Amino acid sequence: MIINHPILGPRDSAEFTYIGDAALIDRPDWQAEDALAQFVDYGYLRDNPAGKHKELWFHEQGDRSFLVVTRDTTTHEISGVELARDVARKRGRRK
Amino acid sequence: MRYSGLRVIKEALTGHKGWKPAWREVAPKRAYDYVIIGGGGHGLATAYYLARNYGAKNIAVLEKGWVGGGNVGRNTTIIRSNYLLDGNEPFYEHSLKLWEGLEQDLNYNAMISQRGILNLVHSDAQRDAFTRRGNAMILNGADADLMTTEAIQTRYPFLNVNNARFPIKGGLAQHRGGTVRHDAVAWGYARAADSLGVDIIQNCEVTGFRIEAGKCLGVETNQGYIRANKVASCVAGSSSRLMSKADMRLPIESHVLQAFVSEGLKPILPGVITFGAGHFYCSQSDKGGLVFGGDLDGYNSYAQRGNLPVVEDVCEGAMAIFPMLGRVRLLRMWGGIMDMSMDGSPIIDRTHVESLYFNGGWCYGGFKATPASGWCYAHLLATDTPHEYAKEYRFDRFEKGRMIDEKGVGNNPQLH
Ligand SMILES: Cc1cc2nc3c(=O)[nH]c(=O)nc-3n(C[C@H](O)[C@H](O)[C@H](O)COP(=O)(O)OP(=O)(O)OC[C@H]3O[C@@H](n4cnc5c(N)ncnc54)[C@H](O)[C@@H]3O)c2cc1C
Picture 1 (cartoon, rainbow over the protein chains, first blue to last red):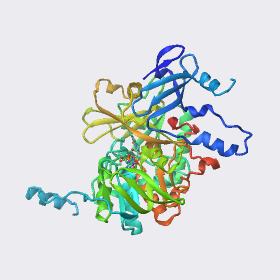
Picture 2 (cartoon, each protein chain N blue to C red):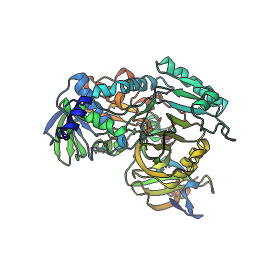
Picture 3 (spheres, protein in one colour):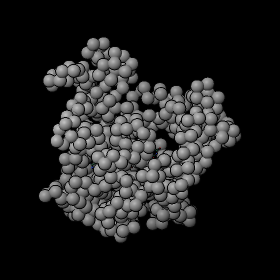
Picture 4 (tube, rainbow over the protein chains, first blue to last red):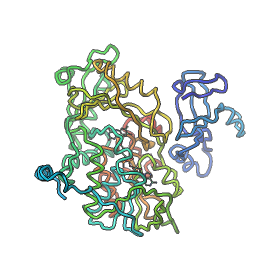
């Protein structure tokens, strides 16, 4: 599988470590009323779809950036790659 | 029809005209007491033990493809009970005991062969860990044998014990472990369940649940609606897909695991061997092919085929301990979709929907679990209480912090 890194161009997926569902970017608020339930959900439950899946890949053997890759889990076709930082910023996060 | 040596001789003399299909082909009835979704090893075993142990009648197994087309026919056929943790070991030891009597029980030749399994040790720390595991096994009534390098070399002279980086410093053996013909397990359970009146319905895909006021009333399928008093999901790698129809999100990711078979060789490998420093394990089938595998590909997948980096990694593992295999050619390779759970252990439990039950999260160890999984799931379905051996396999263990994490790697499904 080739992942088209937004900065470095096409890279072999073997350079990356797979982290999991990109929903992991949205860490719950630890001060929320239902923080426990939210963290159980965040830590352990997954959508695990057959089809398009947004997921985090860590460029461990490269520039060590985190990417959000949109990949079809039935064909391995990759239809989008973004820097996780950009995705988080678009959602209003500062870091 | 009972199978026996006499029967084979009789059929041989009469032109093999007396054999009958091993199970009936039936159309689904409109209602059942129990509907089991998934005709893999676990679903069929559940149906069989429900009928045999609890006298249940009126059971259907719904299979979207054909019996044996899922992981039960794709695995590398290893059975063992060499687990460490209390939540696991009694369950897997019960399973191994059931394997030991399975062929007589089912009247079916599953080619169960207790040729032994050996986990190699490459460092002092690993020996300590395996000693502890061996003691845990013995405490739970299983067998375990810590072998020295010399003993290993006598039994397996072809192993490279002096690898510069990963010398072999001993191993943990379970001599009662071994291999089974996997398809025969599916067929044997299907035939035995059928003979107790279970309807096995192939090409019947469950597409949804009918749930009213928090109670499951039946299942929608491509062959129409089927009413059921109790509905039991048992679909391994498809668990998240199916349970999403009941608005459930599971502590599971689906990953592909590959397996490989070499060209046929003369008998060279008496038993199962696992490499302790990389991920590689191997046995030899009765046909002579070496059957081996290694790591998951490492990312969510529903494609029943894998990618090449893992092929290379597995073959490197093979060369590290069996340098004699350098010129052996691969014959076939394939993949299966694993229901990898968040702590590497399974779930056999009720769900938040009344009358809807769940069995899954087997990771790559579910084949050896087949008899005990069916046994305990049948108990849960019939009595509504968890079986003694499966009482830790609950959904709420993640929330309560009672994970059963053999490897201690945390909520990272691809590492279990
Ligand atoms: C390459 C590989 C090697 C393995 N090696 C080992 C090993 O050495 N030892 C070991 O213990 N385990 C091993 N395993 C794991 C083991 O095979 C599985 O954990 C186990 O088979 C899963 O249970 P099952 O047999 O019920 O699954 P399956 O046979 O997959 O049964 C599930 C069935 O559900 C059906 N289904 C899915 N969705 C629906 C639906 N909506 N409606 C109706 N039916 C549906 C599927 O078609 C399938 O037939 C291995 C697995 C793989 C892939």
